[in-house]
Image (cartoon, rainbow, N blue to C red; front, side, top):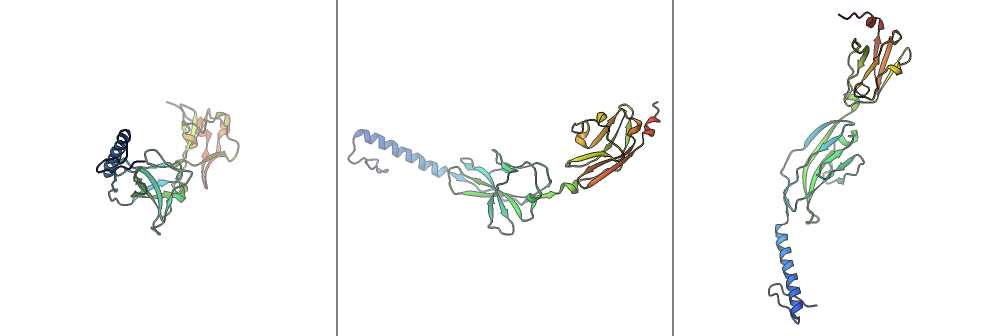
Length: 243
């Protein structure tokens, strides 16, 4: 195999065809050298730790703006331990992913995601500068347990003469599993609005249509460890006189 001197581009002991071939190789290497000079990956601008408040069970998207690079860098996310700065781990959790835009996606935030010593670090790597990456934005999550978010309204029982229904409301975000019962009888299931529908606010509102006298009694909604009771008097409804 003939050897090419890049500076002179001469071919010892080669014929004309090998000269042409080797000259093309030399030109390719020159282009590669020029590309090497242009390859770069800038650093992230310095930013303070970003703290995000989120409620347990909610979804969350965390943006990351990449630094300038040629070619454009790819983004990935890491765990960093604030107590042991040298400890860095790759994020491998079923409910946490990185999308094609480099955003960190939580399908349902867990309490464990908001540990006090845990920082999420956005980093950028170059597709061609192997082994090099830039440390970027740091994010900490402050996760509020959904039980702490649960807020019961005052007892509310109201009659709507246009729909002949009474409804009781429970306010809560995020929405827990809510169970309704009638403490002194059975729920009139055949006259209940679908508790999974938007009209009943996905279970937060119990709506009984075409109210009967036997619908009077004590109703209870339960969400987690919290309960909310309502005493319904059908007599009040029957005495309603429209104008």
